[in-house]
Length: 212
Image 1 (cartoon, rainbow, N blue to C red):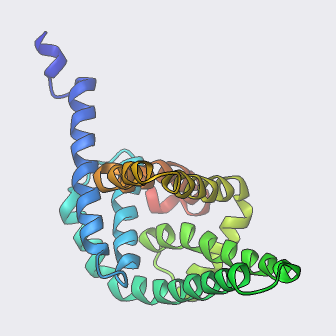
Image 2 (spheres, rainbow, N blue to C red):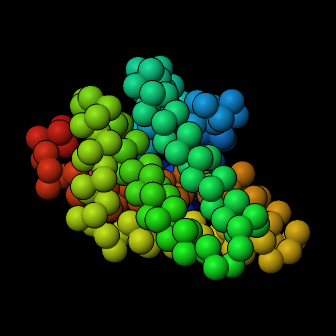
Image 3 (cartoon, helix red, strand yellow):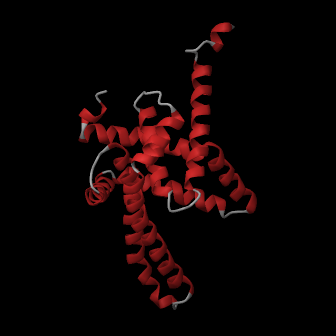
C-alpha cells in the first residue's frame, strides 16, 4: 500500500503536477488583472508549461516571475498592438451585425480574415517569445508563418476557444461552469496541452535550444 504514495508513484506524480498547474493558473490570472499585462503573463505561462512538456520540473513561481520580468517590455509591446487589433476589428464586426443592412453583411468576411490572422499570431507569438530571443517584428512574422504551416493546430485551437465561448453563452450556469474551470486550472492546463505541440514544432526549428 505504501508504494502507492511513494515519490515516484503515478498518484503522487499526478497530484504534484495538478498542484503545480493550480498554482501556475492562479499566478497567471493574478498577473493578467491589469489587462495590458496579459502579454507578459502569457509569455511567462508558456515559459513554464513548455519546460513541463519538455520533461523538466521547473520551480513554478520562480520560473514564472523570472520570465515575467525578463520579457515584460517585449511582451507588452507585442501584446498591445494585437489587443488594439482585436478591439478594432471586434467593434467593426459588431457594427456590421447591428447597425448595417443585411445586404452589407458580406463586409464581415474580410473582418473575419483579419481577426483570424490576429488570433493566429497571438496563439504562436507568445510561446515563440518565451523560447527564442527575436525582435518583435520577426516574432510576429514567424508566428503568422507558423500558424499557416500548422493550420490544423491553428484551426483546432481557435475552434476550441469558439466552442468554449458558445457553451458559456448557453445559460448563466454554463457560463459560470466555464469560468470556474478557467479560474481553477483551465488556463494552465490549456497552455500545457498546446505546449506539447509547440515543443514538437520548435524542436524542428531549433533543436539546440532544447539540448539542455
